[in-house]
Structures are given as structure tokens and as C-alpha cells.
Length: 203
Length: 222
Image 1 (spheres, one colour):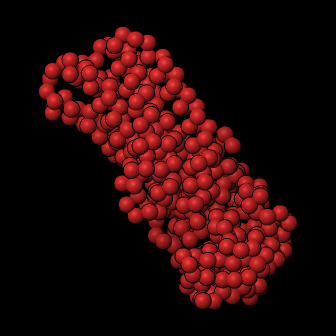
Image 2 (image 1 turned 120 degrees about the horizontal axis):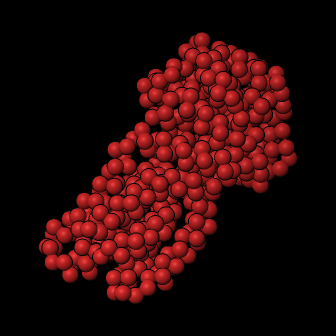
Image 3 (image 1 turned 60 degrees about the vertical axis):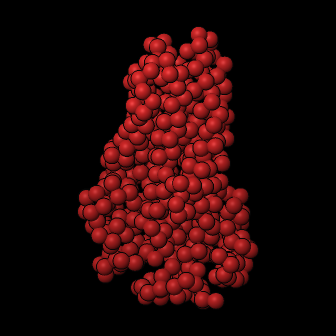
């Protein structure tokens, strides 16, 4: 489904990685591992199309993603390093707006249910802790179940054990339903056992 | 696609409502700058009438510049801009919606308040309509062209000053036509030529600026 062919990435004159290639099938889980500064986030951003690789290309169902643009981005959910939450809005308003902009249709109940499932309090985001913000960002996954490809940058960062295991469960359910997930992490997670791993090194 | 525009405009207006002080700052800046000139130059009515249109237009330019820094900076910092770039609607449409929201918050209030400022310059009553119409046609162009500058300076240190240097020269045609239309009407001639040209600028910038902004945003996100 998702295919990376010989990806090179250079940032600021420094080579981050060379010749990264893989093929991701439905129901497959791919973990991008490596120390800080090895280019995990850059690789993930290349896979979304936010960053252009120095060499090589990313293909979605056989077509290069730069020719697909919105047709491709409609089929992926990306949770980045930054939570993409507006401080002045409540988690519900944030989720509602981001779903509409992503072209996802979700009822009010579905949105509230997703926030409840991640135990996000109904306060302006400004008043939430780092972990609660992360939960509010991850709640978007629960309404993106029909989106086939999930790209998650450090999904477990700042989460407590309960929330991390729930996030695990959500990802496992998505894989079972035929989705694919790529995630980065430098810490251990329960999911790692079933994941294929791409190890990046610092050059 | 239209629903994305509606959602984004509503979101930006909601954010502006929750942070009223930001929008008020730009409007107050406009009022204060435009009010300083009569105080500094003195109350000679003929002189004030002559400089009025130009000063009001320059104040509108500066006030727009002041609020441009916020156009993409907050969305860039909290990661929302990435999500917008990965949204269902083309990025060109998304940034056009953002420019529209910027105009509603920063441009439209200037149009509404302009007659009050015009009072201080003793402009004749029939000129109020021309002044408001010229601002109504011109301020959206300022938001659209300004969005290009705001997108080009994404993530740069000292971006605010750089925006002014980039964008103010591009505002010159709008300034000349806008102030010129009011001066024309004051001289008893028909301002329709200038106003039509302003309208043409608006059409052209609506058609092309969003795509330039979209390209600049993509570069900024890399």
C-alpha cells in the first residue's frame, strides 16, 4: 500500500539517512527507531508529504504521493510532534474543527465519546497538562478509524501507563480492521513486539 | 471544499473573539496613528483636507502589517498548519480562507471606522462613501498580499520586521489608487477609474495570491 523507494534525507547539509526502502501492507505495523537526531521525525514527515526527500520517492497504491496531494492526505491521519491544539479552544472544539478540516464526518456523540475514552477533561487546552494534551491529540484517532494509514510521531510521549496501554489497544484495533500504522519511538512500548522495525543511526 | 472554508473562517473568528485584545490592538493603532497627524500638523483645515486621504490610507497599511505577523505564526507554532497542509481541501483554498478571516478581523473594522477618522480631517460628507468604498476594495488586497509575506517569513527570527520590508513596497499600488480615488473625488472629478483599478487588483490578487501563499507555506513547513 505505502511504498518508500530509496529515500535519502539531507537537512542543513547533514545526511540523516540514505536508501530507506520498505513496503507497508494493510494490517502491518512499522516502527521507526533510532536515537535523538537520527531523522525519525523527518522520515515520518517525508511519508506524509510535508517534506520532500533529497532522493527517492514515496508511493501510495503505486502512485507517487506528490502527484496525489489531497487524494493521499485524505487517506492518512498524522499526529505530529506538536499536538496541533489551539490553546484558546476546548478539546471538543479542537477535535470538531480538525475533523471537519480533515474531511472526516463524525457526530457530536462520537467526538465526545472519543474524548471521554481518553479521559480528556472539558477545559480550555491552555489549562491541560502535557499528557492531557497528548491524549486530546490522540483522541482524533478514534474518529479516524476509517482512514487507512496512520502516521504517529512519538504517540506515547508524556502519556501515563493507563493512557499508553489504551493507545496501544486503539492501534491494535486499527490494524485488525485492515489499517496500517507507522510510528516513531525511542522508548519501549507494548506494541513493539509485533512491529517491523526500521533502525536509523546517527551519521 | 466550501465547508473547509466555512470551518476555518469560523474557527479564526472564534479565536479572535477569545483574544479580543489582539484584534483591538490593530484597530486602536489605526485610530491613534491617523489621529496623530492633525495634532502634529495643526488645525489648518485646507492642509488637513489635502493630506487626509493619504494619511488614512497609510495608517490602514501600517495597521494591516501589524496584524499580519499573527496570520500563520500561531498555527505554525502549535502544529495546526501541518494539519491544514494535510487536510482534505487544497492548501490554496485553506490559505484563502485564512486571508478572508484576517480581513474580517483586521480589514473590515478599518472600513467601518474610517468616516470617524475622516471627521478629524474635515473631509466633505460625499467623500465618506468614496473613502469607505476604496477601503472596502483595497483592504482585502492588503490581506491577500500580506499573506504571501507572512507565509514567506514563517519560522524566521524577527519575522515581523521582515514582513514589513517585504510587503510594504508591494502595497504601493493599492496606496496610490486608494488615496488617489478620494483625492480625485475631492477635486470634483469621478473616482471611478481608480476604484475600478482597485477592483481589478482585488480580482487578480484573489485569483493568484492564495496559490503563491500555498507554495510559500509548503516551503515554510519543510
